[in-house]
Length: 332
Image 1: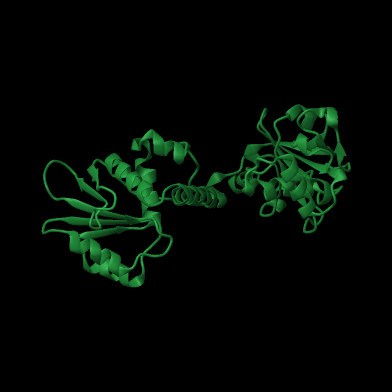
Image 2: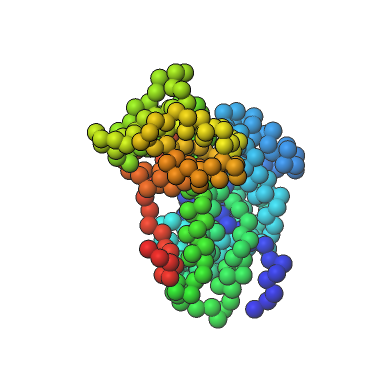
């Protein structure tokens, strides 16, 4: 097979399999944006046009969406390869771009179009989990980078669509780890964005309730450094909880203030979205009656007890239970 090092491969998503496969098109929506060819060929011009076309768009979506439109007309070239995972038949379709950009106003949603020649239609089972994960991008148009060779190898006339042996597919574990890390990052970002001060205290109390503790939140402003009091049942010990939503690491003095509010027989719990300084961590090691929980450990508890959280917080951190492949060698 020819050298593929200079080949550009794009992934694209779309809901209209008939347009893509039967009419040999690749297309994007954003019909309110209008004809892309009428916009100056710079990313800034596309951003400005996007803001005018979608004045209520979220800030983060502006650069991403306008960037995809810019790439579709100015960076995707004739001769580039396209990978399109179709939903109706769960196939991986690989083709080559044949036409320049055209604006088809009467097309309804998918007005931004280019012509493509489809070369191969292969079952998803013919590709490694990592290759499938890469084209599972949340974006409508994106560059394929890590698995270019695998997709182009599938175009070889001698290629056989044998089912990939997952026992030797090293990407399975990598895919699992990527998904887990993405989920952790998402949870921590949502907590940092939505829960500050007293709001985080209420969330931690709800999480402790989900873990089987009975909790009482201290009156605001008069807690002497104690935000939550928790009991496992009607009997001691009492657990005094301090919660901090600050972005900076927790210092030793804050933990010492919690220790000062504790009576004999009490246990302490310090919860933060950030982390602890070295001195604070050393203090916690030398004070076993106080447990420190950082942002990462808090996320672990959320994942473990998510089903028992109140609906208010499930809506704030929307997660869906799914089954994903893991390496067979991984401990369960």
